[in-house]
Structure formats: structure tokens, C-alpha cells
Image: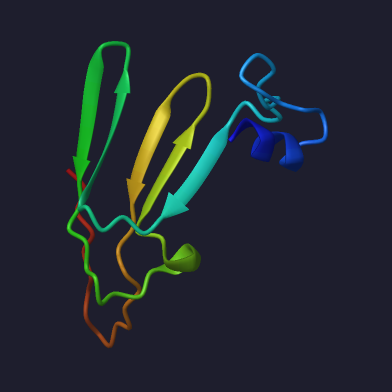
Length: 95
């Protein structure tokens, strides 16, 4: 694995010379079929459940779950599927 990382990064990163942090903040999105996400920080675990709709069409390249972090906080977001509304309403509940 170390050799694969060295091939991807010209500075020769390894366990003692990790990839440099270019940004203080970081965000990623994914399709999470597990129906929950969690993080552990400073001795506490935060669990965020989500009602995942497998047949739904999700924005952001199919993401129904996103995480954002910076030095001050971590944020977990759930996203509902895209729907067409014809005089109706839609609700997305986060717990």
C-alpha cells in the first residue's frame, strides 16, 4: 500500500511523511445504504439515523449522506430523494 501512495503523490508520502493537508475543511458525500451514520469525538459517539429510500433519485451524484468537518466541528447531513411536487408537500425529518 505504501508503494501505491508514493506512486500517486510525487513527494513520496509514507507512514512517517503523510499526505499534506491542503485544506482545513473537508466534505464528502456518498450513498449510504446502512440507514445511519456516526462519528466519535472526545469520548462521545453521535449516531444519526436516516430513512433511506433505495428506489429514490438523489442529487449530488446520488448522495443521500454527506459529512463536513473543519477544526471546530463535524456535521453529518442526510438528504432526501428528489421528487416532483404537483400541488403537494414533501417532508424530510432529521433526528
